[in-house]
Amino acid sequence: VPFTARCGEMYKSLLPVTSRDLKACRVFRFIHVAKNGGTALEEWLENNDLQCLLMKGSFEHVDMQVEFPTRSKGTCYLTMVRDPVERWISGFLSRWRQGCPSHCSNWTKAEEKVFQMFQTPNQLAEAFSSPDPQLRNAADMAHSTIHHLYRGYATYFPYGKIMLRHLLFAGLTCNLETDAFAMLRAIGVPDESLLG
Image 1 (cartoon, helix red, strand yellow):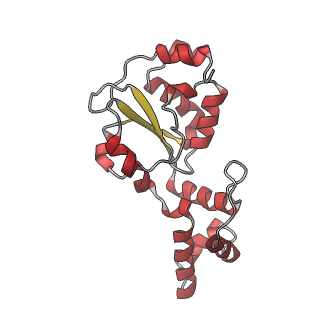
Image 2 (cartoon, rainbow, N blue to C red):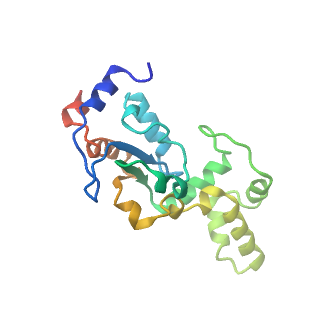
Image 3 (spheres, rainbow, N blue to C red):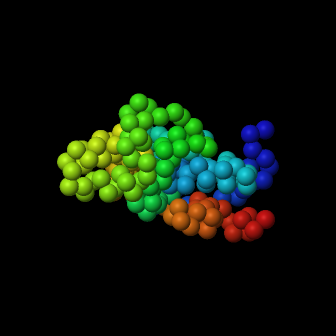
């Protein structure tokens, strides 16, 4: 059985919810922006048997440029956002650790060169404003090599304001646990279900 009775019953008890454009939400899709706490939120939902409340595959990194125009009617989006500097640092450190412990993948040859030159995110950040043009160029190359660094929020929200009309909830990574409950309320989970 993919979900326990608790999750299935909670799904049936969802209160009606509408998006900003007043369309009824029938499917909830989490936009998983890398380095914004999506994996932690996914684990929290699984540990609390709540994963069935979101569309299957919600925590995969999808290309919204492709998915958004083909979304089904009634799809409303949820996401978590993070301070961009903290996200950038986290992206650097994640690749420095080769994605471990949760998403291990070896460095590419280009990443290997980056981490030989820049051992800390601060070294890379300071290199952007170095008086040495070679160091600045190396910093630019490093930034364009590490996908967590060069893929900003625009990558995940390619349709900007149009997508905002379908964005039901945006929580903050720094308030992950509190905002996880707020997200559940936003999709219509009754308060009494959250207490049980």
